[in-house]
Each structure stands twice: as structure tokens, then as C-alpha cells.
Image (tube, rainbow, N blue to C red):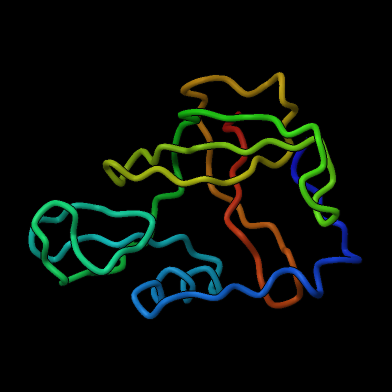
Length: 143
């Protein structure tokens, strides 16, 4: 199972709003790329995007494209409808990225049943179309 959107609601539901320090992330998403901030001073990765490096307090960020490889750190399965735009059941996963040290991202799985998900399961990035203009980063298990 993976998250399924009810198209009836999507035209009114998905239009992200972001702060200027998040521009790089959302521009990457528009190009179907997953990018993370990397401090230009101490080289610490950061996600979600922020104004200041949590390690050295610098404001010198570089946007780095992700390898797209990661592992399931945690997950939950939603079985009760939280909004009519999302059909249940679906999984919400916390992915720890392999090559971007310290980065974890909340996402969803595609082509995966809830009972197949396991701790430390290897996954890779894919994008799922949400609207004609937007796609979001999802993950699929590595075979």
C-alpha cells in the first residue's frame, strides 16, 4: 500500500508555501530532485531547511543533491482517515539518509505493504505526482 490521494480534493489542497530560506529545497522538488542544506563552513547537513547551521551557527548554506539512498528509521501505519484527501491505510516513514549524515526525512512508501516495512530496511528515492505541477519525494524498498 502507499498513500493514495483523492483527486477530488487535490486541486484545493496541495500548493506549498515556504520561507525564503527553503527556496533551494522546493526548487529542487520542482525539478524532481531531493536536495539538502550543507553548511559551507563545517559541512554539517541539515533538514528540514533552516536559517542557521545548528552546529557552528553559520548562515553559509550550499544545496547538495541527495544520493536518494536511505534506510527506514521508524514508521507508522495510518488506518483512520485524517483528511478526505488521503485514502487509508497508508504508511508514514522516517528515512535516515545513507550519504547525508544526520539527515532524516518524513515521507511515504510506494509499492509496499505495511507488513513488509522493517527497521533498517534499505530504500531509495522516487517521486510521485501529486498535481500536474507538483511531485513529492517518496521512497520504495530496494529489491
